[in-house]
Length: 195
Image (cartoon, rainbow, N blue to C red; front, top):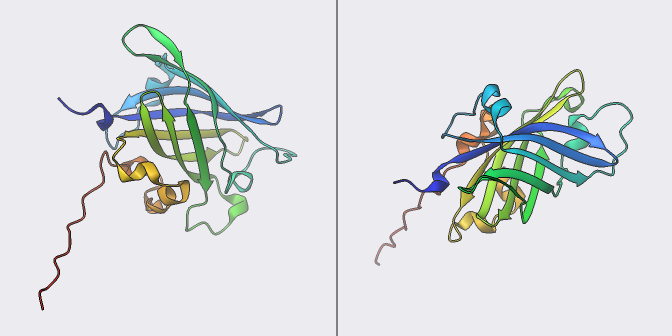
């Protein structure tokens, strides 16, 4: 039987601005390695969530990528989960994310996609996430994050958000979660030559 940490948990929802807070609300679905669940999967999921974080920037018209770049929202809120006893309400103990432009972005004002990384802690364990923040011409903002739970002895538990972002090859930004392995590959110890 496999480790439950082998599962990626995909969170997808819209981000709106309400009373100087970013509100991220949607649904999450357990998925398989390398494959984001379908829109139908998210729409039919009972595992809904609503998270918020303060947002102090002035927005005159609609949210855009330049306003999010470098932003590190600390998310608070609730999500639904059936942990074997029916649908219950849970909250992350800690959940912070960071948004960054892909390295090949030439026109930041016209950019409609940012990479997102996150880390946090729950009663089930610590996690890290990779994902994509998308903007439409109509002003809609959607964040899809894939959450990977990691063990306490995993070296990534000590990583900062910049460390996580530094491990994304952003040429794969359509599915950055493909670079979120269950465990890091072990480096072979180098043998010193005897003199």
